[in-house]
Length: 432
Image (cartoon, rainbow, N blue to C red; front, side, top):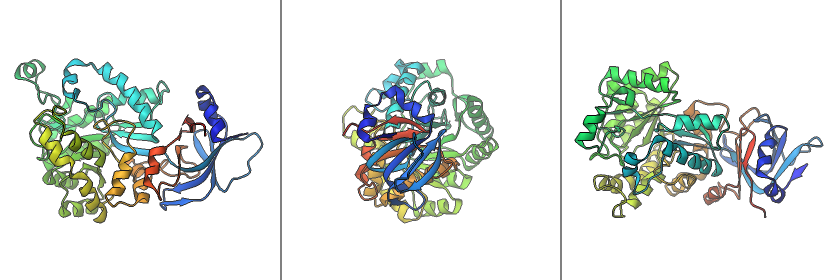
């Protein structure tokens, strides 16, 4: 039984998950090979029980009764992974005041819509780097209660007092007195012992990865966007304790000194990396540290900094100064041989527009094929996974498709119209 693009679009949405129960053949006009970075010719992908059972060249002849989905004119790719998102919110002029008015359940309800938009855009996995909602959203998705990408959740980011992820930044003295100073339970540390306790608390709460804010940040209610905020000893204690629990550590970092400390202490990835120097690049290559640029977030905040009232005045100059530099840093890092993986920092920008990061990467001089590898093969390596990021026999059936050839024209990434995660179809093309 064959379903064309047109007939597939007419199928009832309630029937789509049923496709995962029996073998399904996807007939792709082109296939992106994430290992070589090349777009290959016509292939047939046979999916069964959430896995890729076989990958066959051409339009393979299959046993009678096999459900076939004809993806004419389309390139099939491994589902993308965004390694830096925040599903619990989305930037707006009201973001800072909402923290005093909304309850966690409000953010949780919003996150359901954000998750669905992200999946529909072709991102079958994300790493959520900071937010108390994300572990719960992860569990709801895994239980089939809501639709969204596979989430690797950091939970609460770890900061120092007054640092980028200190939840009491911007509170007045009366409120701070009532709440009391946050500690390791709340993800705020000031010593090596605190650092170990904070990681263990994240383990207790069910995190999948550890996130630290190694320097100041753009959107926190604080003056510095790049000052170092941990000692090397504190970061090393976090990294060593994280290893005890099988965790990797992602380090938000804009400033040079904070980046150096984080790399030397053994973090897995540097996020943003605005003021990355040649020395930092050499250290990253020496230690095998990944770089996740988040160009989208940089461009977004730089643009919004021009609008009166969008950001608090203490944030506005940081957004204008730091945000505008990230794209050039990504270009230098690629030319310098630093390993790059894909991340947007969505939640700063709008969820569902994640694929625009590919366009910005190519604008920076990163080849389209490498940009696509950064969200497939490279992202899987950052996560320590060997069952996703490529379309090969035995791997997860996370498969997306889009009209055109994204290596020849990177703008094609904005047109994803077929999404399969774990063998279940979540998006089909509009009727043609």
